Length: 549
Image (cartoon, rainbow, N blue to C red; front, top):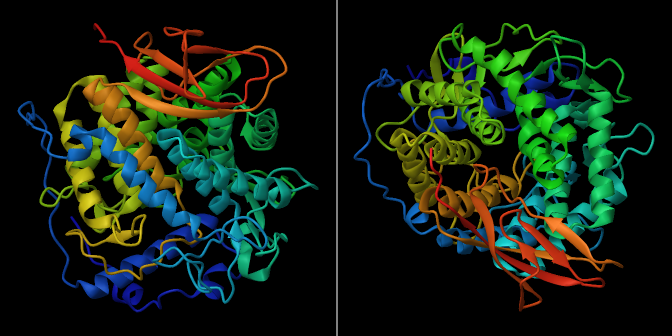
């Protein structure tokens, strides 16, 4: 069932940041209040939205399904889309102090009031890292070094201002000039070390290292990862996992759940496995996947929709039904990635369970795509709007599970979500995407493009994986990626792993160094040998071989 919100929620004022962020309280509750404000506005605009969700569809075959999205039929269409998004985020760069403003208007310009309604603009670690990620991926598919330059600017701001030189780890929010604002009374969300911020801080840094293999960036990346591993990892037998939060000095770590676990995979867990191919990083990636199947997935049987998101420090579920539908989809996507590294049936089976849970209980069968929010305990969809990052999870999870299983249900889920996303959420006039529409695609929310939760990450990641998955998983066609490498005193060999994929299927087809073809590469091992003193562009074409089950 899709239910409307209670009248008292509908009366809640839109954007009251001082009330939301002032005072003590559970960090996830504050996230929920922010989400409920958005629901209230949309429900007020579209009253009477109670309806039944379609029942289970077990046994229905989609074998005759035909792809409709031109972005899946021709994944190269993702490239101009990525340019549209990346060009948008250039406008929020602060040429006076460096870094990117967090509050961004519909046209991409910084604004005084945005995400949480402050009277002045500010810069979060999330914004810098997410923008860095988006610019890196735009560079890697286009070869346009302007994007890489912007990515460096974002990471440079993080290095100069966001690192906590007293306690280690990252600050969460800075004033425009880079001063730490975490202790500002208006930012009590950030008076702690939150796994969400610490994980996402590494997202853009890892992407920049992927594209450049810079020793300086590598050092910064591993410094951040070490802080998380030493301060937030709980190694107690039977309850292993990242803690959700700790005090500002890292004391008293507590709680576990979706955020410290699944976001740990998408931001750096899988990335460090791909970049370094070291046992320790692979083991941590898979340990997080194990936490999903050992703790989140079992609660599906206990809940009426999705799973429990919040747990105490011993992995006991909290009595809390708030559910992001996108978190169920994201977990399925991450389990698919883990399965391609270690093909344990439990990963695949759990991923399919989660995808079908959303398809059967929280999917818009009329317009396509997943709904936004639900209550896992009561089994109801509480917000049937379409949220930009939630749609991305449906696309990526659908494509990876179709690649793994061949079940066209997942292809259908990805395909119709791409169509909805591109038709309704992309702002083809100003650039990038809107945060949310109603279930039919009408934009009702204030057209803010950047705030504390939204930057360049999800929109550019959507394009990145449409390009990679569309070519390599779906169409079995080559992709070309660009890297920019610094001068090395001696000859060096680098290994390139742009995505998780079945063993033995991805190979390098061709390589050019500063525009000149070279034969100095091992295609099957995806290794490229660079001469001493080489600086410049590495253009690599990857191709996929057929896989025999």
